[in-house]
Image (tube, rainbow, N blue to C red; front, side, top):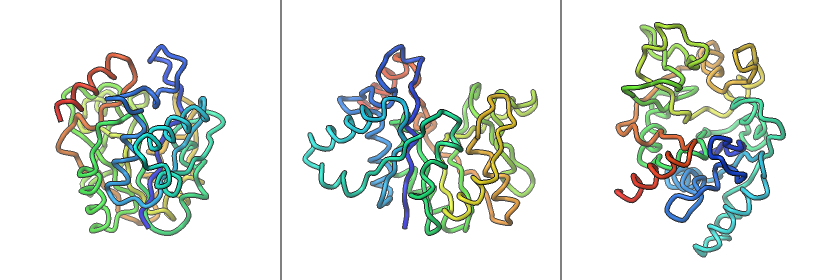
Length: 252
């Protein structure tokens, strides 16, 4: 079975709003809706949304959107929730959905604040993941200005690791291939790796990208697959970025 996890627990302080970031709307629908739909249309049978800040408001927003589309029953059958009580990083957030992940099949991990990702991009990465038998496949992108993004560090065998901006050396910061924050994992490999992730980094958080080195050490292939359209990794962190995302969506 193919499943998806949507990370939607953060407050989004740069939005300058008391609303949870992922319920801010793009073309009349909450951002998180687009991530759920991309996962669904890429073949994910079940979706778990990780909620935290104002969790009930996020859940209500999702339910109300599907209800307005006449799809409430489908949403109830497909979408579930897991609570991240403390914001301790992306690795910790995904671990909150351990029961949902299980040991069978693959799971796609997406962000609730990247509404521009398409099902076509996800499908392409999922095919590559399955064909190559990867333990994890990272969806990456090439950016002229990669500041702020985790860098994809490759070796002669392919993907070596991902280094966050704050932990990167000067040489690593010069790399233009970046982590989109979207992944496909083998479920059993992900659960095993999450149990080994530590928080000895600049933020004191449990980083999901740290699972890559752990899965690689298991002997499973790991890779990064660049998407064709770098706009799709645009995260919405400010009201200005929300307007930009809406313009791109309109042009589609």
